[in-house]
View 1: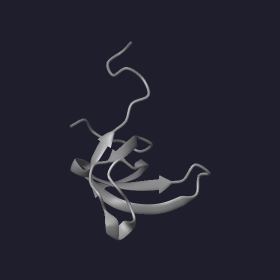
View 2: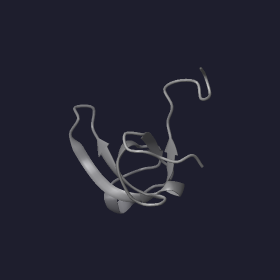
View 3: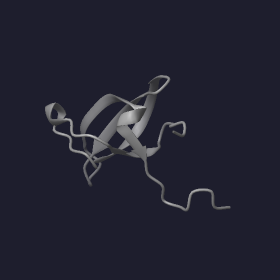
Length: 71
């Protein structure tokens, strides 16, 4: 898996019902805690944060707005 960095937009790969989060929800990495552990912020369309939690890289999929590898 590619290295994730702050401000990377990611999708959640599993349901986390105790946090009110479902697979596919989109968040943004805001901090790296340790290798492979990231603080992810989930916000609504108005920019209001509704969840922030530390997640492992294997729980996340980076999203891309451009063709990967394009120049």
